[in-house]
Image (tube, rainbow, N blue to C red; front, side):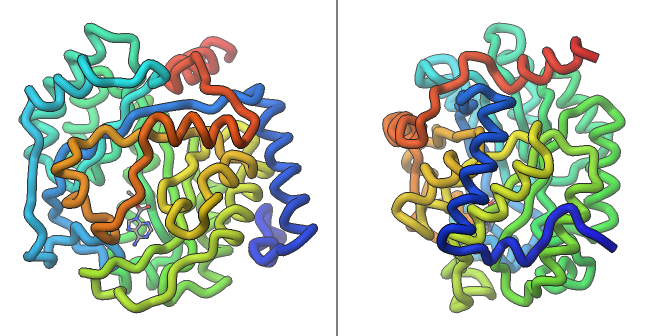
Length: 331
Ligand code: 5AD
């Protein structure tokens, strides 16, 4: 079987690596015209009913203080504090249906009624009724990562439910009118090249509007502490391959790129990534949104703008949501 992604290309180095990234950058510019989307993320709750071994917010991490932001605090961030370049808002939580029902549904309705912000959510797998309520409230983009595309590996990492259910959720969201983004982690423990190949092939087979790749960061309070972190170069190669294969995908530069290389974030924007994220979680809560480690790299507006400029790009004036809307009208 021939693959659209060749996993061996992930090891490209030197000239081969630079050419791969430069070509992907050109493909990206030909579609998006040197523009990069700028969204804000609010991490609204770190309660989580899942137990993924790579994630610091897993339910077995009993030492982590849990928080759920209140509606008023969220309103202040969205309506008073957003930097001018932000066109979209991404609301992210651990898997916490209580936060969705009690806080996020009313917040999303208010945002969609009183602003032109695009609304993305990253909330895990929920009851199908809740997806519908989120969409009715005004969210249009659902981010649901798989992290690995191999069933056994998925199970070993104690990822949510099982891989089949995750894929079913992606198809359900797509069929019910969401734009869907997924993603994976590169350099996960027990991840063989064959597993990466399988993951890339699986992602390519799904009805996705976007996809992320993050280098693995070992979390200090997770069962995977002590495993080596993922490679910056391989992650850039993965971004470039994804861009080349799916020119229209929305591909984020993830903040973990800052942890694997000083220039990682700007390099991602030069290798096919076209989405940046300003972190708007209140400073006193950021440390508890523990994906891997208390030592997070927090992307503020000034850093984002600096890296966009370093990559010879400009912030998009159009939101992700209206970009997708214009695609709907084109067909
Ligand atoms: N290393 C890298 N990325 C991680 N994520 C969670 N845990 C880790 C980790 N240990 C990423 C996943 C998740 C996103 C919010 O953070 O891609 O979807």
